[in-house]
Image (cartoon, rainbow, N blue to C red; front, side, top):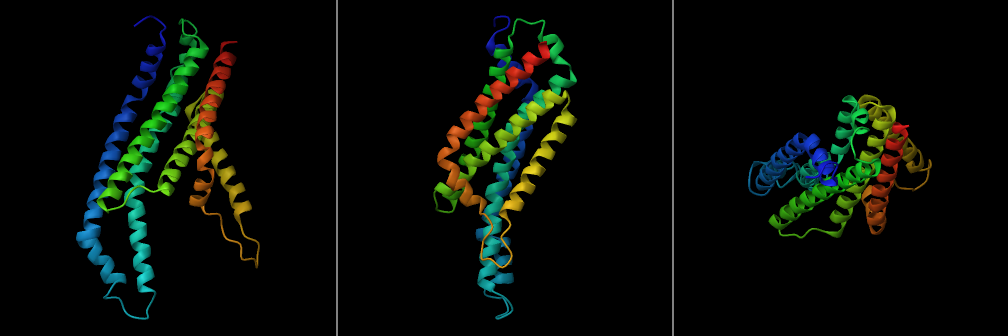
Length: 258
């Protein structure tokens, strides 16, 4: 490996976050196993019997909408066993923020100036690792959900793919913002605090605009429908996020070199 090579930068990024990748894979495997066992119990075991007892044939007639409650419980369980393992894979995407925090704690910027690696090369390595993390998250999520759907005699739907890819893109955006904050404020704690504040402000704005007018028949915005609506533009959003990541990292590295 040549001194200052791009491959060396990629290996450095992987080496710093390798423990997080391993922990993420273990968490994904544990939750995936839990999901499969839950599905088996849901269809053939005690969970299915419990649901039938609470809101099935044994439910008290007229006490509540037994059939509707049964469907709600089943849908909630089905969503949980499919969604939780996929949620665990999203942690891969935040590995870039973890690396940024380690760099700042070790004051790596001081040593980086003494190496032949240029800011553009470092920024490109950061951007490419963000892409790899997002791709790994998406592949694992789609693979697992496809497996669960196959066990239930279904195939992965357009809606599921839209929600997954849109979610990965949103988490990637959050990760890039976190990395920029960590490097701008020169610390993991301040950077993540800034990210939390940003997310809360965005959520408050969303709640204000999503609130129906009093006395109107307006409905709250369905996030799944929003994912389906923007899904055709998701590839462009994702590519734009990676481009912004490169520009932000490069600008911050150049700023710190002055």
